[in-house]
Length: 497
Ligand code: NAD
Image (tube, rainbow, N blue to C red):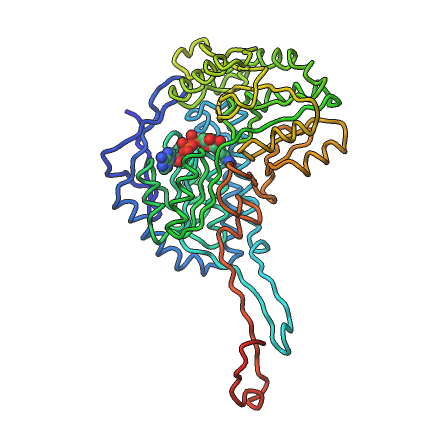
C-alpha cells in the first residue's frame, strides 16, 4: 500500500479524513509511491485557526530568537541534504546531483532568513521638526500562504515560509500535489529545529484548496509559483479579495550568442541550460539566438545536445531525468510535432525516447529545432521540456528587438567577449534577470528573484530584501517628549509639524 501523505496542522502530522486522494508517482516507473489528500474544509479551517492563534505569540518572540530557529533549521537541512535529495529525486525524477542542488538553493534562502534582525531594521530621522523624531518599524502581516509548483519541491517552498516566518508571520503551505513528500520532510525538520506549534501549517490538494486560500479573509498575503494561466488567476482573485499577492509564472528564456563569444563555452553552457532537468526549469534556456556569423556553430551545438541522454535519478551517466507525468510527455511530444508541421527544422528529435530497464518512464529525448521564427507556436509557447529552439538574427539590435517583443521576461543571457555589447544588452533588455557569459542567472538570496512582464504578476519579488517588504507592513512613528508641563500648555490647532 502506498504511503498516505499527512497534513500538518496545529503542530502535528495528521491523517486527512478526506475521501479524495491524488496519486504521487515515480515518473521513471509510474509506481505510485504515495497519495496526497485533498484537505477538507474543516481541516483547512483548523489550519487557519491554529495559524491565527500562533501568530499572537510568534509575533512577540524576539527577532534574535526567530533567527536562531532559522540557524538550527539551516544546519539540519545541511545535515539531511542528501536524504532529502533522495526523496526529491524519486518523486520528481531529477538526477541526484540536480536534486541536491534543489535542496541547496533552498538552504541558501534559510541562511538569509537567519539574518532577519538586520533585515528587519526600520529607519529613523531625528529632529524632523524641533524636538520631534520620526522612526519606522516593520511588523509582520499575520497569516501568509504559499502555493508551489512541482519543479522545485525543496527550493520554492524554502523561498517562502522561512522568510515569512522569520518576519514574525505564520504560514500555510499548499505544495504541488505531484511531489508532496519533499515538502513534508522539510516541515519535519522545521519542527525539529524548534519552530513553535502552529507557526507553519501544510494543507494538500489542488484547485479547491487553492481557492480556499484565495478566498479566506484571514490570509493576508499569498506567494505563488507556477504556470501563467494559474498565476494570472491567482493574482486576480487574490487581489480582488484584498490580499497582497506575488505570482511567479512561466517563461521563454533567450540566450543571445555573439560571434565573438567563446564557442566551446557557448556549447558547454547551452547543453546544460536547455535540456538539463529535462527543461523543467523556469530559468531554462529555451531559445538560442545566433547573431551574424555565430550561426555557423548551430550544427555543433545540435550535435553536442544530441549526445545527452536521460536516465534514472541514481544513474551517474544520466544527464537528466524523466518529465513529471505521462501528460507532460504527451504535451511536449505534440508540441514537437506541431513545431515540425509549422516549418521549423527538427535537427534532433526527442520523441519516442526509451531508457533501458525503465520502459514506463516519461522519457523525452533532447530536441533541437533550427530555423524557428517568432510567429511559430514552438517559439511563442512555454514547452517546459528538453527542447531548444534556434533562431538567427543579423545584429545585436535585432536580438534585442526579438527578446524585448517576447511577452515573457524571466531570464536571459548573452555570450560575448565584447564588454560594450554586454553592457548594451544588460541595459536595454526588458527581462528581469540577465546573465553575461552565464546561462542561468538565478540570483543568490541576498538579491531577489526578479522576473518581469508575463513571468511575474505583482510588485515585490521572492527572497532578499523584497521578500521582507512583501511579508511585512511599515509603521511610522512621529514622537515628541515634553521636558516640563509648561511646554504642554494651550491647544495646538496646527495640523502640520
Ligand atoms: P501549475 O500552475 O500547474 O501548478 C502550480 C500550483 O498551482 C500547484 O500547487 C497546483 O496545485 C496549483 N494549481 C494548478 N492548477 C490550478 C488551478 N486551476 N487553480 C488553482 N490552483 C491550481 O504549475 P506546475 O506545472 O506545477 O509548474 C510548472 C510551471 O511553473 C511552469 O510554467 C514554470 O515556468 C513555472 N515556474 C515558474 C517559476 C518562476 O520563478 N517564475 C519557478 C518555477 C516554476
